[in-house]
Amino acid sequence: MNRVKTAQSKTGEIIAYSEGAIRNNISAVEYCRTSMAAISGCAAGILGLSGTLGFLFYFLSVFVLWLMVLLKSGTQWRKYFISRSNLLTNQFMGGLCTYVLFWTFLYGMVHVY
Image (cartoon, rainbow, N blue to C red; front, top):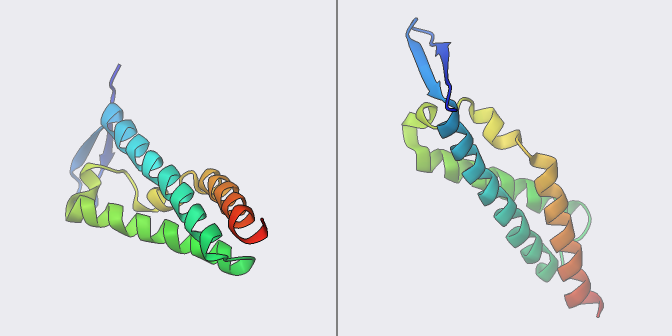
């Protein structure tokens, strides 16, 4: 069942959000975040990044993905997402685990063996 959530804007207007549409949008972003974590982990492993530099590469990748999603949604991002900060921080640790998995695997395959 799709429910409609409402919020009041700064101007006093009532804004309605479709819960189903918001879930779908967040699901699409999570798919992109997981794919980005795997691809950037592979890149970091192949490039031979280690230690702090490898983690900084992940933070940079997350930030770049966040900017690309905001650019794609344009100035009307409120139509698609409730909060911009949730786009940056949602499932951050899950993506980090995926990143570390691919990073260490590819680093070991390329630089150790």
